[in-house]
Image 1: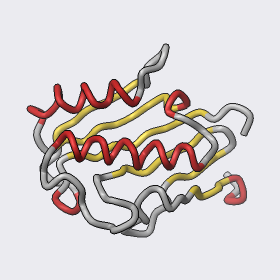
Image 2 (image 1 turned 180 degrees about the vertical axis):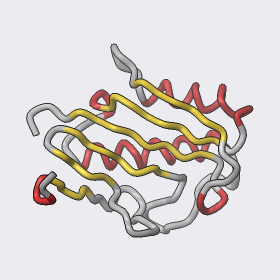
Image 3 (image 1 turned 135 degrees about the horizontal axis):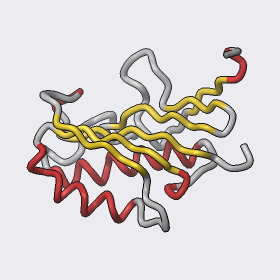
Image 4 (image 1 turned 30 degrees about the vertical axis):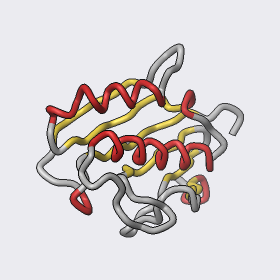
Length: 134
């Protein structure tokens, strides 16, 4: 693949990357979004004090902001991966997630429990989106 086919996506409405990666990379119509944790983009601080509902809302807000920066919306998301430090939070996350992806066809998804996440977060979500007309 020619590197000129890769377009980095960045927005101030999602946290700046904390490492050597892009918020997302657009390749033709495919948008590959890096995982988002519950960082407030304006302060760089974690949101929620360990409250899974507040963290989930912030993570989804960050993720959709990146999709929107590429010209998409939540209905363009076709695949997500959710990483939880406690799978017992699944039902709470699922409720909030369903509010963000209330489409005719919801994204395909995987959800896994992990031992740890950056900044002590309880949840991280990444996604792939298909952007028509890009």
